[in-house]
Amino acid sequence: MKIRDYLLEKTGLGADGLSKARLKTLLYKETKSCTYNKLYKDTAWNGPQCIWNTFNKLNLNWNLVKSEYKRNKGSDSKMPDYKEWEFEIQWENDKGKYLKLGGTVTASGAGTVDDPLSKYDVNMIIW
Image 1 (cartoon, one colour):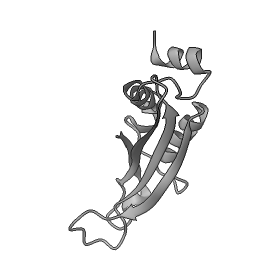
Image 2 (tube, one colour; image 1 turned 180 degrees about the vertical axis):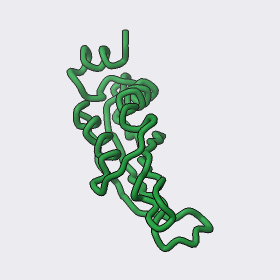
Image 3 (tube, one colour; image 1 turned 90 degrees about the vertical axis):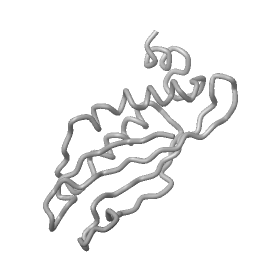
Image 4 (tube, one colour; image 1 turned 60 degrees about the horizontal axis):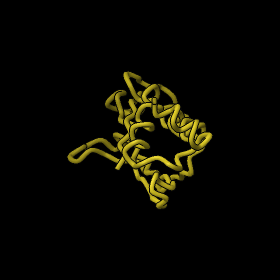
């Protein structure tokens, strides 16, 4: 049975009842269209927004912990090189225990030297 089918059958959307490994696999699979082989060029952060919309579509209990602009170590630029968002997801796993899953979404600059974030790609890491 596919994870998405399992999720729909067992919980009617949402993460409850999934092991941590299954939830992580589901999240990577469902957000792949937001992160794989895409370059964004916008000021509204449509890349990360795609991930947040997917979390909402899956009816996850999630929230943003923090977000901040950052520069690469040794960078001479006054402009940030990337923006990072930290999120957490709370759910009841397959053993009935309430857990938190954390992760980051990073928009890495792929634009010009003067404006690195005029274009960006997105990746997500879950821990």
